[in-house]
Image 1 (cartoon, rainbow, N blue to C red):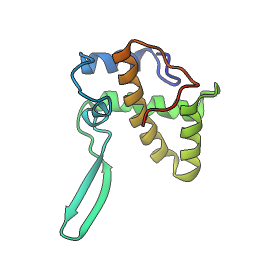
Image 2 (image 1 turned 30 degrees about the vertical axis):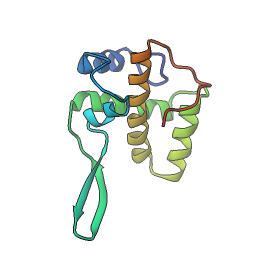
Image 3 (image 1 turned 180 degrees about the vertical axis):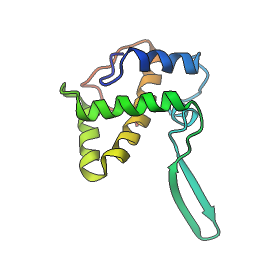
Image 4 (image 1 turned 180 degrees about the horizontal axis):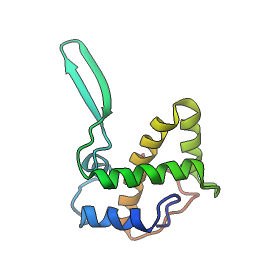
Length: 127
């Protein structure tokens, strides 16, 4: 719950859905588990990334999206995550930025849960 935009319902749902912090080798694998990675369409010479895959828990994906939307629109406390989200929103549309931020939130929340630490606004973002 120390991540800006993430409330008690989203944090508890994230932990309840994954059930074990050590179930993934890398924290980035959590975003694929929740269906937040891009779907690929490949055929011969054609190769384009599609929308998100939408595999995994739909309710948790909705909660992460709403947490990302509140981070972009409601949170006023400065952090590198919020700055990154606002810059992304200026370059892309709001919805694309919110999906990208929810993907980033899944990775950040997984790292925080695994390490047992709290969110630090000044710390570098996880790639």
